[in-house]
Image 1: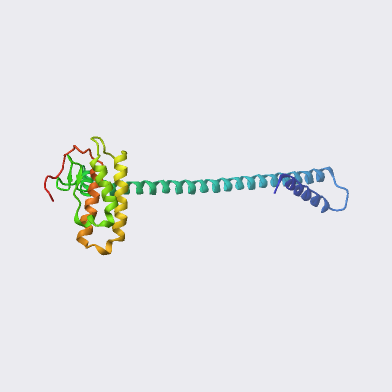
Image 2: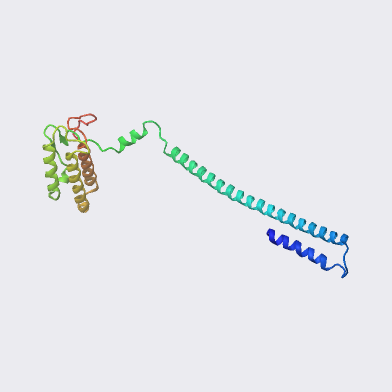
Length: 216
């Protein structure tokens, strides 16, 4: 109820008090009593209005605080879950010193042996399964690039490596088409040889570190 309505109600009460008085000439004392009652009614109405307004403000503030607390609690819980997930992933992926290096060494292809690749002559010795005419074009091209290899032809950013990698890719695609004509042993041997050729293209030709010296 707004202020205007409150005072209107108070005025109504005053008029009612006056209208219910006996239909006779009132004395000054009676008039004062009526005015006093009207003032009291007005004051009471004003007090009730102020009380109601204050109560409404309290309720609105309480609702706002509750909503803010709910939002803040939700945000804290979200960050807590995010941190827990980050901690879990960190613990899950934590490895002992050196283990990543050992894993990389395990996954790394074997280098070509001295029997598979003559570094001085730049000559590749192919396994029998890859001497089939179907692979002749790529095989001859690889023989040529290795025969012409210079001392610093190595690394993934070199033209030499990119050429070797592309030819190896073409050989693998041909192997897929010829897979039914190969035994499992021949297929594994051929793939291993191709991986070793591509790996050798990353290494300087005079780098003999870790190179097997047998003729396997």
